[in-house]
Image 1 (cartoon, one colour):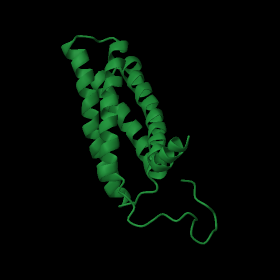
Image 2 (cartoon, rainbow, N blue to C red):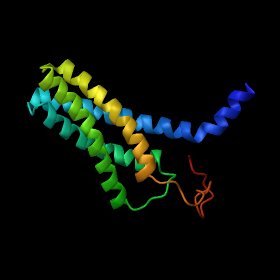
Image 3 (cartoon, helix red, strand yellow):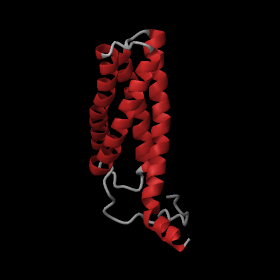
Image 4 (cartoon, one colour):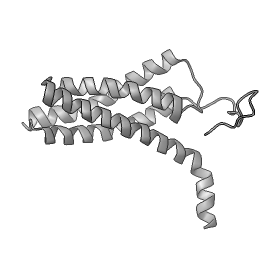
Length: 160
């Protein structure tokens, strides 16, 4: 039990960050999947155009969630810089989804919704690995000064 407690203490910050990142990612995934199917099946935009629309909307949600919740303890290097980098890196991650959907649809000839959704899930999974790594490396940088436990002048303890 003592070993588990020490491991938790050592990795608690990373664990909490990963849980927050995963929560935001899950909601963004639901937005992405819902809009992909709405645009592709109901509106008829086609699988690749639908993926771009869905990713644009879900990425906007994910930026706000990650900036103001997951990585709020990290320095803010300017919302303009972060927003630009966030969308640039999500554009790169979008390529994983476009490649898997494009391969499934146009190379394998699978145009049904189930095949498009499976390809989307694979692409999102690959893109998520890239996004988590790249956000920590380039977008939401390490804090250069310790974050105070209490909010300045209020005596109110921050939730981390």
